[in-house]
Length: 335
Image (cartoon, rainbow, N blue to C red; front, side, top):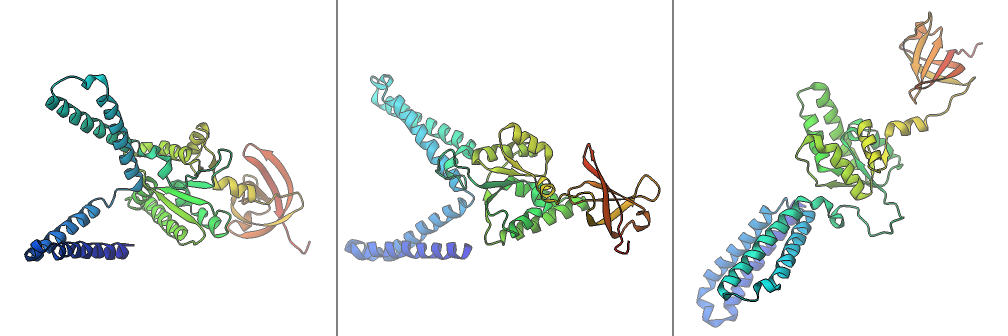
């Protein structure tokens, strides 16, 4: 992209120089000023290119907001201008008042529009002109989902092929985590950046960076919910508090942990499964492991196998406050 823009700038500068020379070639009286004309064309082209570089960070959303603000300010000034207030008076003074009126209202319109540029749905990525009852398949991703990394596996298996939107302030927050002095936070942030690059390299996943910014870090959650609501997108997060805020605002949210629990196979009494025993149980000889959905499994006579993966046979399942508790025993095919 940068190389293409550079070529376009050079081509534009050549056109400006050639145009200035052609003016002198066409008008005979200016024939002796060819070098001066070429210099002026080069300067004008250079100034335009410098203006282009200066406006590098100016987005399409900002340009649309600027245009809208100027138009609304000019409209308000025009309505006041044609009112009876300006029917009588000194023409010179009226001209100055009209000029000031247009300048003030166009300035105010521009400032107000730029401050609320996120509300311009027409230029926000993925806004489609579709019937209200048609659901738009957009997923807004927060920092916790990027750090978790399982979104990459979901996209690799093509369970997620929707448009994925990542706000700029989420990327900024991820970068702050990666630059943290805390070693664990730093490692998580770097992993999040690696997962982001993996997502970017998937050819069948369309990722857009939304250019919204947040002045205060405390406002990140509120801005995420606002964007999800504006984009009519689903919010992908592992943050329970953010999910509850989104639900209160009527925003649909996705939780990868809940998805993994839903996909975990159901277990029944008599099933034989493979599990890793991670710690000793409360009663003598017992060991504890965990099923993929997070349910605790207590294995009788498994204490000597803590730290190992063993085959177990389920003997009973009891409901608990956290879901269910599974009891099993070491299984041997020789039995």
